[in-house]
Length: 208
Image (cartoon, rainbow, N blue to C red):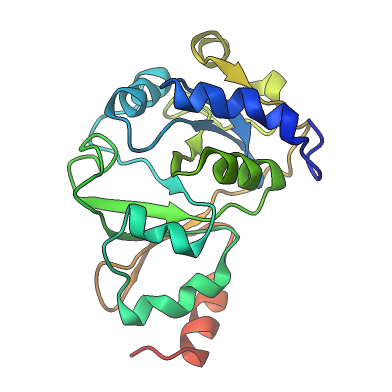
């Protein structure tokens, strides 16, 4: 699939997989991810099983826009709102999740990490699906993530329902993960967005 101008007809089979409780591999900004309907308990548990991921480790979700936050997050704290300017991009913000979320998705914590993807294929997929999808990396837990389809673990390729190949991705680190459930907010993982960039947005924003 063209990574810059994804064909709507090419996206349709991937959307169909999501709507049928399936799991697919798809491109994110730098690495391939595992996508499933984030509001479907059965589909979410399949992602955990495919990755061999411990159930106490939450999965992040991808949204098509800020207006879709209400589907997974009841409220965004005032101090965190300036950070939404960094979307789409490589920062995942952790908030208190809504009651509609499957327990497996949050690892039993009640918190949910959300991000708006920058990759055109990922954006198109989430927009056409019309709801949040999981955005965890397409690798077995504890093993390197894949920047190309040929680097996917055989177990991953065998157990998913569809692989959306957008060629070789940029690679690099994953998204920065920031805990916005508390003040001061905490960087849980440093990644694509630097602390300096975060501090700059907060300094110029209307937060504490």
